[in-house]
Length: 352
Image (cartoon, rainbow, N blue to C red):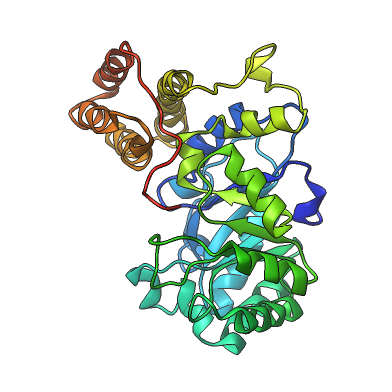
């Protein structure tokens, strides 16, 4: 992969702590249309930890042989750990690109001057890009939030172009400020202005909940690709729905079928997808990595806690999942819940 625009599918998954692991990537890949190619994230990876970790068995860096175009996201600000992390991820692990996190607003990242803290000083941020680029033989991208106030577009353009001069090959923008976190609306006009004033590809992120949002963002902003987070985890068949609108072939697993569209069809598909997700978590985390059943239960529970809000009675599903003491009970509880017809909502107030 020379750059993100070499890939032919306009939707990609966002890097999310606790979610963007191999099991979720496989689940979403099930719904990717035939011949479609897009890039895939990891969870945020701490550059201080990567040099000493076993990348084949650490849950955050587990990958399957079928996976390609992986662009792990690193969190860091120091040259030595960044250099060692990048070299290991590219040479040993097989990364096709490296993404730098400049958008994480959580306190753990802020206290180390990681994540969105890097946006407080453009030269500081540019230095992190330079260090990463210098040690990388693959493209380097940056994922960031809005700069300063939500209306500081000239400041944002200056900031991003400085990162591009430092070596960034593409930019992903989530146009909310750090203070907003997930509240309020993402200001897509910032993506529009960035696309007009920046020479590298721009990926738009924020308020993507249904396939129509993907098409709207591309039409209104001119962005090169769209990134979706929790809603794509909840609705992985969004890949299939988008493929149908683009005239692409159905996914291998769903030949001669149409993507679910109605609230009832999507509710039923959520149940089927969740059972497959449980299987994938068991396979990767228990069988491949040798982790405990408890870890697998926690991974599934976190997935449901994040995505159940799109189900009409998702709180009842969350309760059924949380009381399961082992995977046998978990599967039984999920099957029982979806014996009754479930409806999936198009939108939720929980912002992306």
